[in-house]
Image 1 (cartoon, rainbow, N blue to C red):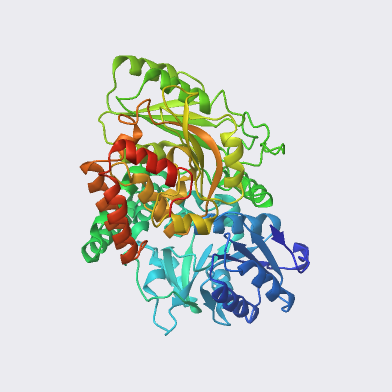
Image 2 (cartoon, rainbow, N blue to C red):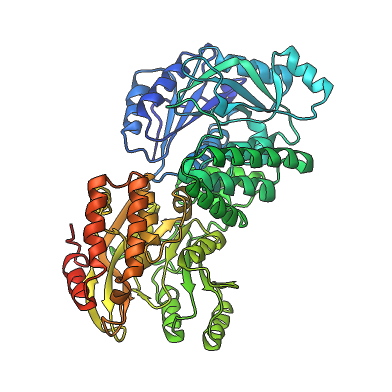
Length: 630
């Protein structure tokens, strides 16, 4: 959604057209304070682009009201889904340089409030030093230098460049933060946009080092902004669950983008390792950081999806992104409608409106060959909306007949088999699979289940509308595919899903479709026997992921011909009781449940593990599978 309350001036009417890009997410009051400060600049910008990352606090409406009583032109872009800071700045930059013909773009976080002379000082520094990047001096609310946003001085800078910067009262830099950053639009057009796949963290480091590899950049002490973070802290503060993004994105920067050159890569790589060591040493949740480190290292071995692909399906925004990336010679993807897209159950066309997506299907030695073939067919040839790829992850060695089936699948168009040499368990296999999936949107599938033909045609439009995680109901099947023995109806609506999650897993894992970036933002899958999905979904909800369930069954889930030997049998016993205790300990420690809720869950859910299987089956179907459990 875009909104233009004031007509945009023709670029021919101005000599130096400055567009501000502010990326906003659920910080309405700080955003309005920043807009007030922009309107009070001694050199006012020509236009402000506000990119709202699907805020839920009324930010878009507040910006509309603000624009109606101020003379500063505003272009409000409301994204249907949260693309993270990286996606928001990429979208805003594309809009500024492509649609609004900016000569310079001032990037700014929504919790940043510039002093009145900040923009004027940055423009003067850009002109006098010939710099493509000018970083403001960032202070906290009490005037102290903010350690989170200190630009990195350029190592080995020439005497001439240092002298030119000194004459302007500036310092040469090699990288800087997006908190308040003035960019030469010509450099953006030449080198393209930030990596939207980064989602959060290090997108500004990668982008500014890319722009400054062959250009000048300075920090300008005369351009002062306040970064009104809740606490005063530096980059080695404990990041908790998000450490995985710091690790993954740094690894991508050093090994994939490679904007630094050999010498700088060694310097900054060494500094990064030292900072990680300090962070780990000071953390009170070292196990969380270690898991994030390992997961980030695994994910960082893959390649980030192109920005134009990550920001696909956003209307005008996607058009702007593709135009800028294509002009810079960067990958933009095919841009064609998804193969096999037909229509949703409502009859409306969905071709071209839904994102490209992968199906992730793990296989291990205990899986049945015919059931695997049926599962793959159900997500490919049987689907009204077919995926762009199916990634089958072989979790360790398998019997010869199953290996032959995998080899045959690997030869099919659109299907890839990734083989792990050893059995690592479901959580690790899924993490490895996510790292190798081509697309940000990923649908889960098990090797013994069957997806109904309209599954993806029903779920992908919900993702396209902004959801990060979408599940569905399922049918339980016994001896064969048509032997329906039960039905599970999940909770619907974000509030009900969050309430339900304090006691039960609110999603049927084999039915979910999610954004890989949202999974990574919550810390990814972690090893927890038969409960890795519940733990992940709880963390995604706590991290602010937008969630939804479709109540109708879209997957047939095998529970086995006998309740004593199928999935219900696996839900009981000492092994599951231990997993239950670990899960409840983590949920309580992470603040997802209260002490009373945690105690209730240990007694009720833990006790359930020792109920005889047949009674447990009846109870589960009566209370949980019908969606009435409390």
